[in-house]
Structures are given as C-alpha cells and as structure tokens.
Amino acid sequence: MSSLQVAKVLNNNVIIASHPHHGEVVVIGKGIGFNRKARDMIPASAAEKMFILTKPEEQEQYKQLVSHVDERLIEAMNDIVMHAARASGTNLNEHIHVALTDHIAFAMKRHRQGLFIHNPFLYETRELYPEEYRMAEYAVKTIHERLGIDLGEEEAGLITLHFHGALTNQHVSEVRKHSELIADLIHTIESQLNLVIAKDTLDYSRLLTHLRFALERIRRGENVTETSSLDELLKREYPETYSLAWKLTKMMEQRLKKPVYPAEVSYLTVHLERIIERNEHGD
Image (tube, rainbow, N blue to C red):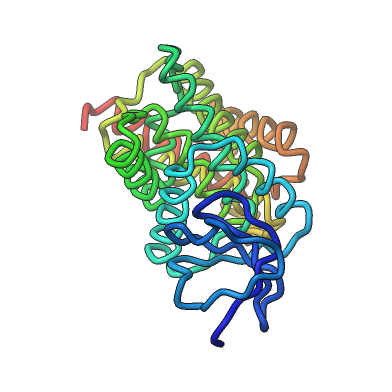
C-alpha cells in the first residue's frame, strides 16, 4: 500500500482517510491534516498511527469529539490505547477511542476547575482488575507527561473500568455496576458476620477474586457443577453461613437480572466459613 485518500480533515494532526483494504480509517501524524482537503492523496508513510472505526456511529462520535478536544490529548490517547492492546495481546473494543477520550477530556476539565471526585471503589477495582489498572496507571502517567495534568490514582480506578469494558466487550456502566455490587456484597458479609476483613489481607483478596469470577460466570450464563450431597452437608453443618451465602446469591440475581445456579451458594458457603474460622483463630 503506497497511498491513502483523504476523506475528512479533523485537525492538523488527525484525518479520516480511505484505506484500500480497510475502508475508512483514522490516521494520526504530525501535520498530516495541514493544508489537506478531501480526495487528496497522501503517502502511507506519512501516517504515524492508524486505527479503524468500523461502526458509522463510532466514526461520527469520534469526529465530533476531536473538534472539541486538545490535539495533544488525541495523540496521547492513541498511544495509550495501543499500549493497552500490546499489554493485553488483544484488540480492544473500538468504542474505547470515543468513550475513554471523552472521559479523560472531562476529567482534565474538572481537574482544571479544582473539582476532584472520590472513588469509593478504588481498592476493589485495583484488586479485581490488576492488568487493567496497570494500563490506567500508564494512561495517567502519559497524560501527566504530555499535558501537565496529574489525574491521580482515584481517576486511574475509573479509567481501569473503561479498559476492562473494552477488553470484555462490556459497556463501562456494566463494569461499574459489578464493582459496586461487589463492594455491597462485602459490606453485607461484614455486617452479617459482625467482622471487618482487612483490605490488605489475603482473605480479602481471595474473597474479591471469588466474587469477581462468580459474577463473570453469572454474566456469561455459565453452569457450575451441582454437588447436591455437599449442598445438603453445608446446609446442615453451617446453617447461618449457608443462609448468608443464599442471601448474597439473591442479591447477585436481582442486580444482574440473571439466574444464579444453586451450586454458587455451596461454593460461597465454603469461602465464608474459611473467613470465619481464620477470624476466630486470628490467623
């Protein structure tokens, strides 16, 4: 491929171009849009970065966004998304180019106005999605270096949700609901068992991991092997813990609006019993 045809100039450094194999693509390059007009031919070597927005609505949203956003942010965002793709070894859902750019542009605006938000789910988010959190840290570092604004770790937690959504093809609002649900489940556990699980312990980390994978199984409609004999034993031996586990699965069912397989109650009961025993023995 030797050349691209300009379809629309978004700014001096970003254009929409016609690619002979991929159709319309977003092309980023220093000064690539300067003095260009539709139907101009440009050498492919002029493109420093290039990505495809296959959905017309994504293209339209991106075009509108670019006209209102600092050009340096557009360049930084492409590097941030490419870094995330390399780190994960997979392509991210294309909507991240629109959603995360818009999110960070708004976060930067808030920061300049001195409006800082508290992220109550930061610890859970960092523990649940460590790979995505590292991507978010890179994003915050890149924005700081290139645009001089330090969004901080609270914002990194929110950016993490965007990366997780893009990697799992979930809308960021769904990912946020999962984080909030997990925090509510843990609060219910601590309240019912009358204990506090220290966040820096292995127990807390294990509980977060267990709940995360339970929610993922439920989201995907994945069946869990039923062990009726174990279920009966747990119900008989640990009635209070089993009752709490049942209550937690009902919370999941109601919030996710999806059925929860009964075996989840058994697995959760075993996990809760382990926490109770370790708490009683001070391990």
